[in-house]
Amino acid sequence: MTIPRYTRPQMAAIWSPETRFRIWFEIEAHAADAMAELGMIPKDAAKAIWTKGKAAKFDAARIEEIEREVKHDVVAFLTHLAEIVGPEARFVHQGMTSSDVLDTCFNVQLVRAADLLIADIEALNAALERRARQYKLTPTIGRSHGIHAEPTTFGLKLAFAFAEFTRAKQRLESARKEVATSAISGAVGTFAHVDPRVEAYVAEKMGLAVEPISTQIIPRDRHAMYFATLAVVAASCERLATEIRHLQRSEVLEAEEFFSEGQKGSSAMPHKRNPVLSENVVGLARMVRAYVVPALENVTLWHERDISHSSVERMIGPDATVTLDFALSRLAGIIDKLIVYPENMQKNLDRLGGLVHSQRVLLALTQKGVHREDAYRLVQRNAMKAWAGEGDFLALLKADKDVRKHLSESELADKFDLKFHFAHVDTIFRRVFGRA
Image (tube, rainbow, N blue to C red; front, side):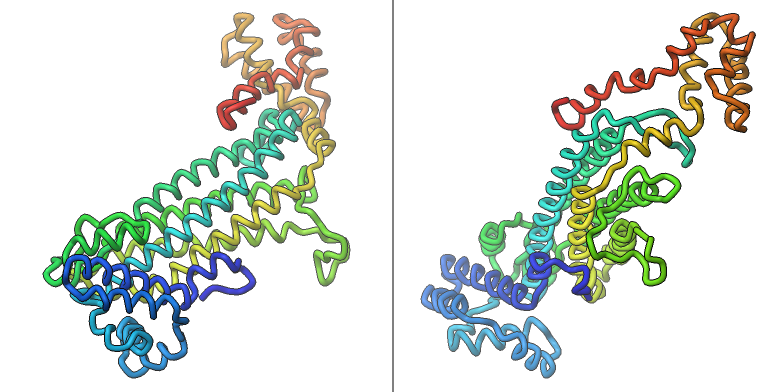
């Protein structure tokens, strides 16, 4: 069940009993309209179903009361609908089966949830682009294996995230399309008691496509793909949140979450400013990923159908979408208010005394005719001295007679120019954002 602490109202509304029953009614009423046009039921009956049902407020408590007796949720709903509509209700659900209603409704809900998640990503990417441009040329150290590698810019870090979430949006759009199908095909999906034109009409009215072939249920590989996509998006959320957590570590402190006046980071230590929002996003991402396995297991059902998937989907449908919606919104807020410390970035860049320029020196030596293995050895022996705190890297290189045979002091100094690394930032920005 969704937890209010991590639930936003708009997404929660999609999964409310009231919304579910309203969608069920719309499916039944549209089907009645189609059947009336085909002469399967009286047109007056279809009109009465729409008129009385549309004005009604479905009583969830009453439906639950009926279900306790009949032990069937759709039958309970239809019984309650009959109480509202009256005698014409006998023409509701003609030739249909419960899965026609349940599966079509579930897919409507998943499509609506996807629309909100896509909007969430757009909001996150708006924040990422704004901050990426703000720090486009702000130097910072790039790290591989957690160790200082070569210089990059903080803007490029954020541009990388923007590109990742652009892909996430595309994946969600694809997952939305894949799950946006409707089945009104009757028992075991043969249309024996309901005309395929009814299905086509309902699908169009509900904003869905016709499921090409169903076996009383919509095939669950579609849903497995949907929830797998949510998991990939959640993993991207975790990657960015983890980067922020690392950057906020006391030994790094290149960026940190906004800390509001009156906020407290610890019940015991008044000095603490912890990355609690990013940590929260990481935890939420774990939960979204956890729903993939049951979604995959739902693909395998007995023969034309069973309901082993049903209990799973009642949980993972709301939980996965609500959780990811909250995580994406929280992450957008983190990026929007992220506190950035360029001076600490520069301090960390300088921490290893110029070692981050080692590759430029290596390549310069090879350009002077030195074999790569020999050049690597010359650079590394000086780098290891600097690493051990035995001197400044550039000074050590200048004092190394074997290096100086090939590179002058000015040539060596030139290889320590930070701006060299940023010559193609505009190119990358154009690739990511469409303009520099």
